[in-house]
Structure formats: C-alpha cells, structure tokens
Length: 222
Ligand SMILES: *[C@@H]1O[C@H](CO)[C@@H](O)[C@H](O)[C@H]1NC(C)=O
Ligand SMILES: *[C@@H]1O[C@H](CO)[C@@H](O)[C@H](O)[C@H]1NC(C)=O
Image (cartoon, rainbow, N blue to C red; front, side, top):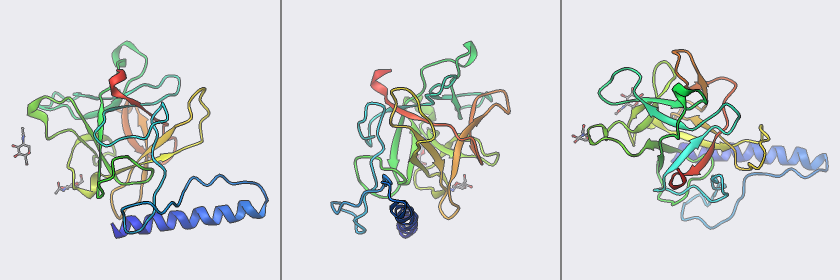
C-alpha cells in the first residue's frame, strides 16, 4: 500500500507539473486526475474510474470482454496452444478463420481495497471466468519469463498485478473510453501490453513500444 501511495503521489506530482506548464502557456490542460475527498481510504486520493464502452464504471464482480478496437483487432481469449492439461495462453482474436471468436470474459480483483469499481492505475488481478472445474486454479493472468501473458498467476502474488490507464493516442470513431493495459509487478515499474505473433499465435506480451489499445465490453452482451 505504501508503494502504491508513493506511486500515486509521484504520478500526481508529474501531473501537477504538467498542469503548471500548461497554465503558463495559458491553455487548459484537462488533468485526468481528480482529487475529491470522498474515499474510505486513508490517503483520500480517488483516481478516475475505468469506464466500459458504454461509459459505465468497470465493476468488481462483473464480467467483461477485453477487446482491441482497432481494425484487425479482436477480443482477448484463453486458448490451449501447448496440449497442456489446462489452457494457459492469453491471445487476441484476429479476423482470420483460425483466430476469430468472441473472447473469454474476465473478472477484475483488487489488490488491496474493497472498492466496487476499478480505477485507473489501481493494482488489480485479471482472471478469466467460465473455467472447467479442474482448471479453476489457472485463471489468473501473469507474465512468464518470455514476457508472454499467460494464466497460472495467483491472487496475492505481487508479480501478477496489472493496471489500466486511459490513452488518447488513438482516435477511433464513436469510442471515447480507450485504455492500455500494463503489467506492474511491485517494485519493478510497469510494462505496456501489446501483441506479437512470435510463435504463430496472436499472444499478448509485454512491449517496450507499440502497445495496443483496449476497450471493455460488458460480457452479458456477448
Ligand atoms: C486449487 O488450489 C487450492 C488451494 O491451493 C487447492 O486446495 C485445490 O485442490 C486446487 N484445485 C485444483 C482443481 O487444482
Ligand atoms: C509469484 O510470481 C512469480 C513470477 O511469476 C513466481 O516466480 C513466484 O513463484 C510466485 N510466487 C508464488 C508464491 O506463487
């Protein structure tokens, strides 16, 4: 939690500096950080809620499809690409017959607080739902040694934490709530999530650049 607070503080510091710069250039910088004082948390800092495609806050306990909204993109899904006992590959559908589909719903789990919505830059676990009973322990996302996103993580393991951050890098018709996903193992900073085809599957991986944008869609639509 300490670490989390100091992350938030340094983020705020940067934002504040940016605001000052913007102010001195006399145009309005739309700071994405709000500082209301209505939080049950000690620090009283409340970051903006992550919004789904409809503009509703992402809720803990609700199922969502994570989708790359770019042309040629698709929903994130779970697949077994190694004849394993339990599937563990976290892939992204692409519009070809082999890789098309509607995605696998996920749930979000907070690292530390009991808030009922997911906020930007808050540490969360991501887990697939709808698993065969034998594979219930292989639903939580993690990043493996090769930097591939896979399942097999553990709620409570700080190496398996992710964060969601708003991005304005893409302008996509009719879509306002576009985010990037980051893998944020504690103490080690964050790495963006992108995609590669290294092993001929559209894997989610951590990347240095060229991350991919995502939107969140209520899974009961699917
Ligand atoms: C899942 O993990 C729990 C706790 O470690 C264990 O008790 C349970 O047997 C596991 N279930 C399966 C199907 O592996
Ligand atoms: C936590 O995750 C790391 C990285 O995946 C792994 O090496 C470690 O064994 C995990 N620890 C536990 C307690 O599962």
